[in-house]
Figure 1 (cartoon, rainbow, N blue to C red):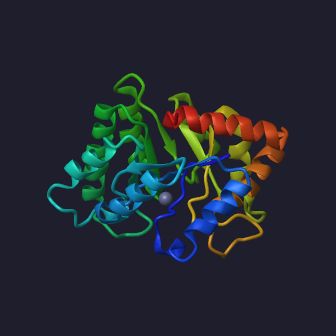
Figure 2: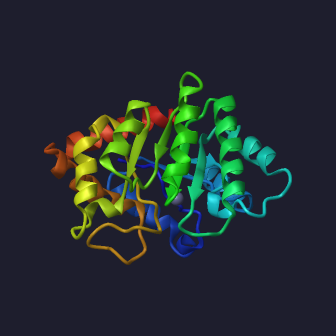
Length: 257
Ligand SMILES: [Zn+2]
């Protein structure tokens, strides 16, 4: 398995980061993708990627951190993206749920990073909350604008129809802990049903969004096995088959060697 979205750099893991990675490796995780969220924490992320086997990262500014950026922020994202362990631009997108940044700035920062991803030939990791109506026209236009452009809609929480439109344009759908929730979860079950296994990326978004039975606790990569078990069950395939396919999806998508 590969955890395609884990914030292992956050302070929630400062006490026991090595143990967390060890538990994940013992549970069968062979690689980890840490998305960037702001310029200030990239050094810590890059340090982890340089010192831990099979830890990769993405370079980018999260929409919640887009309000007060230094003038050279895009140069910083570009410089970090040229690191050999950097496999994507992310996480980028729009978030109208938490009003941390004016919408026009979010759109501008998002667009500039999409253009950078195209220029550097990297996939994008998309964060979107309560902003899909604004984000999708920009993203779909970008996807159609050049050969090989692709991305993942991380922690996907829209509709099956929206998922299929994205898949039609070659995107991946990121699925994490909420896909194991039992209550009021019909829509997510329909999404798993609709999206081909070849288009699913497994993720935790740790330390957030723990799967059942850890809901409410700190999340960690090892728990993504619970999410994968749920996806396999809903898809009617064995755990091994779901593991093989989603691991292949992640390796191909991020071009992990
Ligand atoms: Zn995230």
